[in-house]
Amino acid sequence: MTQPLRYQIRVRGHLSEDKAYGFSGFTLKNEPNGDTVLSGLVLDQSALHGIFNRIRDLGLVLVAVQCMDDEISDVKREA
Image 1 (cartoon, one colour):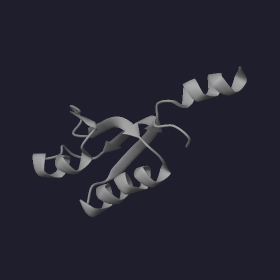
Image 2 (cartoon, one colour; image 1 turned 60 degrees about the vertical axis):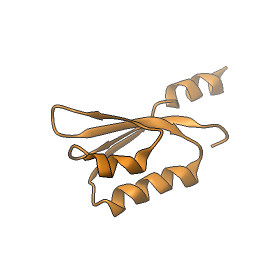
Image 3 (cartoon, one colour; image 1 turned 90 degrees about the vertical axis):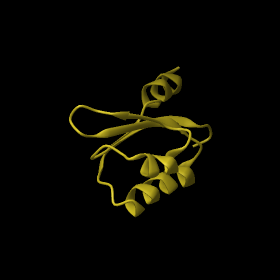
Image 4 (spheres, helix red, strand yellow; image 1 turned 45 degrees about the vertical axis):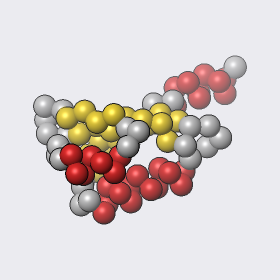
């Protein structure tokens, strides 16, 4: 990555405040189905892997990861 990209990361369960603390800079949204969606900018691949490590260390189940800038990047590549 050459610039920060916006990601949405979905984990199983609602996060308590102590677990949410490790995701500063991210918006957390508790979904009605019991999942939590974390949204925010990720500076680079190393930072993304750090987030995955935090999810693992907390014993959370990773449900989905989506780069929200993919469509923008695709448009720039076509131009």
